[in-house]
Length: 179
Image 1: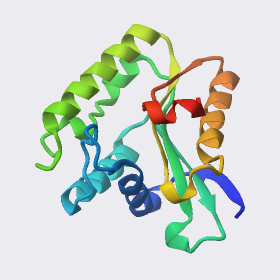
Image 2: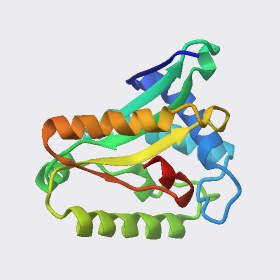
Image 3: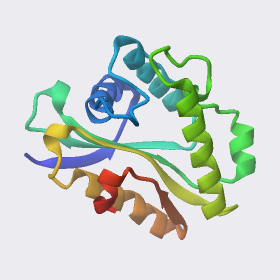
């Protein structure tokens, strides 16, 4: 039952994919990533690409050491750390979600529309400021209500406070009480 917050590593990718599928694959009208082998292969490739190529991505996880090793990651976040628009352009990183690699089961048009809307919203709210951006927060449904999400959010907010920058957080309506 002890919960520990630690950084994620590339070796966590299989567990993060399983957790993402459990957390984000509910059959809802807003679900653009169904739980299929092709989508999970895409999730794996996307995470591997992000770990290897995105200099601004910072993944953290909550681990329950009382669980079997393959089930120990019960929640995770992806934060984007503060950086300038120039540094972002120089990095050359492009999220695979914006590529042709999306599986056919995904709603490509819906995804691209949603990503563009998010990009505009973040830009209109944050402008040229440097900030922490909470892009992903996932808790396995079997472990909701244990304080994992709040712990992960507070971790990022504390880092932002220490660096004297703001946070940008986006959330689904069902998650807003956490914030």
